[in-house]
Length: 123
Image (cartoon, rainbow, N blue to C red; front, top):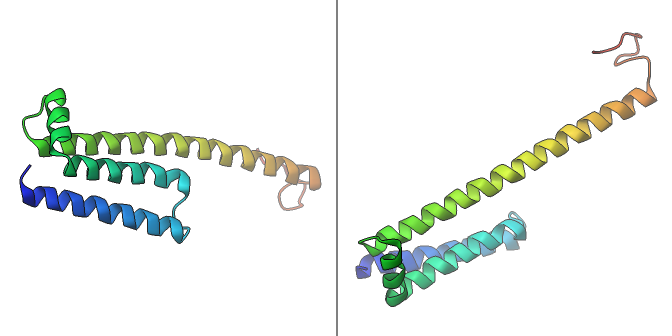
């Protein structure tokens, strides 16, 4: 890997690690989500520093350039994050639907006359 690209990869992985750590410290990012980002920045750092390890992984993947291997793993990480967030959003949507239905049932128990007190029922 060219020294300039190696230096950029090391610097960006370090900055990502520090930024995620700062977001957790300020309670803007949950620890549950930060672990993936911290691991990703650590992996990029290790791969950027260790040329031998990166060369072995590059040959296993079948890529010709070290940077292609880094981009490949970055893309795989982003796909995994997107899948994780899709699952999380689906679970939260189901929870919101269930809570809305439960709230509607409780309101119906409190005021059986209807939504505005006129006695008409909503479908």
